[in-house]
Length: 329
Image (cartoon, rainbow, N blue to C red; front, side):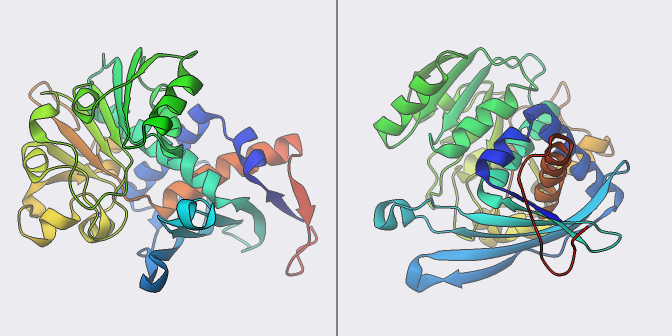
C-alpha cells in the first residue's frame, strides 16, 4: 500500500536535523556521481503569470537509495488573485529497485523544508564558525524554514527581518520572539548580519554590496526562474560563489542575469556545494570574505527530504494508506 502524507503529516515526520543531514548526503552523492538528475523541466504559462516545473531524480545516499518526482508551480500572484499559495506541489516517492510507488507527499511543505535544509548545509560549510546573527530579507513561509534549519548548524542569537510588507515582518517577529532575539529592520541591517538569507521573487536587485558584512555568508534562495535577481552585480563579483547546480543556476539562479550579460563567467563560480561538502573543493578559509550560495532547488533535495519523511511515517504509522497501480503490498 502507498502512504498518502499531507502537509501536517510531512511536518510531523521531518525532524529538521535529520532533513539537513539527508540533504547534505544528497549534495555529497551528487559530487560522487551517485545521483541521476535530469534538468528541471519548465512549463511556462505567461497568460497566467506562472509556471510549472517537473523535477525527477534518483539518489544513492550510501545507506539508502530512492527515486522521486516533484510536480510544482510558481504563481506569484496567486495570493492576491485567488487566495492561494504562490507555490504548490506534490511529490511521488518510489523504491528505486522495484519502481514501486511508496508515497505521495505534500510537495509544498516538502519544498519549504528542504529549501531551508539546503541553506543550512551551505551555511554550515561557508559561514563563520562563530556566526551568531541571521538577517532575513523576505518574511514569507520560507523565512521560518530558514531560521529553523540554520539554527541547527549555528547558534543564532539575533535575527533581523526585512520585508516590503510590514505586517508580514511583524508577524514573523511575533511568531519567533520566544525562540530568539528578533526585530524588524531594513534590508541593510539584515545584510550586515553574519548570515543573510534572501527569499524574495524580485527581478531587480535589492541587496546592495556596501550593506553586506565583510565576511557575511549569503544564502540567495529567491531566484528560481530566468530574470530573477536579488543581489547586486557588485556583490556577486566580489563574493566567493558556490552554486547548487551549474545548469540550473546559469539558467534560473541568482547568477543567471549577470551571467547572461557576461558580468559573471564560469571563472567566477567557485564550486558546486556538493564539492564543498565532500571537501574536494575548499569552502571558507581564513582568507575568504563574503560568500554567496546560489540555490535554485534540486530534485535530489526533494528525494532526500522525502526519504526522511517516509521512513519516519512508516516507523510511526503516520499517514493514510491507499491502493494504486496494483501495489497492494
